[in-house]
Image (cartoon, rainbow, N blue to C red):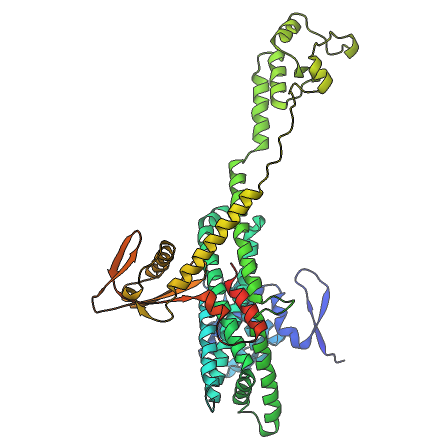
Length: 546
């Protein structure tokens, strides 16, 4: 009787579970001694990478970890036989060590990986790698994407673009974009798990939360500035009709080695794959009507994670400051009751600890307490027969001793809001004029920057400080972006020993002369390379938001 499936016994039950025959190389994962089977299979995979084809049981036993290997080689031999039965390994008679006739009757085998066993182990390795991968926000990948898109513009501008250059540029672009998207998704998932208080280690979280917030802020800044540039470069390539020819060159290069009868189909399939990759790249960085780009959504999630992290810190501090042990409190209170000298003291302790008073405590004063101490009122006395309490007529009439007056009039804040709006508009205008004043339009000497008004000088000092903060020994050029992502400065040292002076109303700022190039990124986005109006609006909005 034949069947297309085999059966295996679950290690936690005696029920026979049918399994497809081509999945039996995975059966060792649910069998007893699964850890030993995994070690044995990894030993064979490592041996194959070292070009070792066959292994004997003694070789496998020696290669296992000394802390977890079985007591003898017989256990390894049994594990090898089980793996042979599942199809992970193949056993061949070991004739190399036969020296006598009786050796032929001994059970000696050498083992090697089967194709199914190797495929199963590679799949398990990939599974473990993906689960153990820690996501990260790759700001460097954004710079690489900008570089590759500019390279594609140069290649597309040639009279006869080189297919090899186009294929390499698109391959690198796809690889960097795939890494960026996968790692960003994994990082945001791990960040959300970190924010969850149930899965958090308090001391570890408090130790690295500052670095995590700085990491998020730095990536958000790069995503704001570079995301807009990437959107503009994508728009320029699409508007000039250069994307299709580049993708066809890459598809032709990829399908060059296909068989002649399959060349046309292979090229068409390759073009479909490249078109899908380009579409994904464009949708990641460019927003459309009714759909926000993935970069903008990622930026929103990263921005939202910062206040969530701060809220977690606040909750942790509150939890640590208000930590109490209810059982210890009750044991202490029981000790106090036991140590009380008499019942009167215990009653007072009861009232203080639990606050369970009668309604009469609202108007009881010292005289009333003294009177009741001299002539106590039994607790069984009905309310109507007890001695009366004298209360204020106002309290009886209004229920409160407080004298109520007229409510305060609602203040008109319109004038103050108008003045604040004027101040905000004036400050925004000053900042805009300062950016326009500082934009150099190209590399110029610092000594030729001219006189600066106070607003422009403050902005210039901030940019210069950001640039010098990134300066390292041995560097001659550095690039920095302002904190709000609106301006970029490129600073290059000069070796002529000249001095620059910048005059302001507050005084003269002097120092070694440098070559500077200050770029207004808001203007670059707003009046950048010619693109379609809708794309320019979407990309510009994404680049200058915040």
